[in-house]
Length: 61
Image (cartoon, rainbow, N blue to C red; front, side):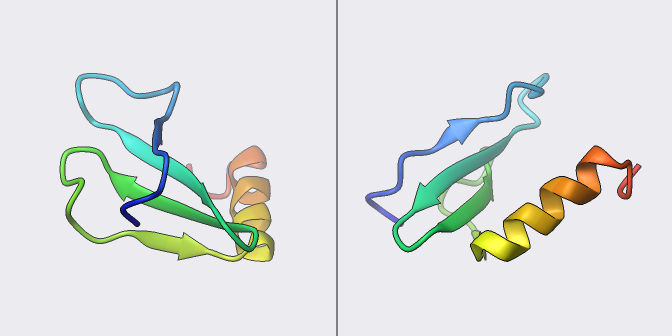
């Protein structure tokens, strides 16, 4: 993950941020910006797309 280029969410407020990085092989990584050395979630392209679709329809509200 040392080569990953992390971007903060545009919805980040008061330091409660999720960061995303696109990885080789169509993988996407997520981490908590408050703990950059902490755990990272890595999703396949299909998993990431399913997550985004869930967000779009309010599945996680």
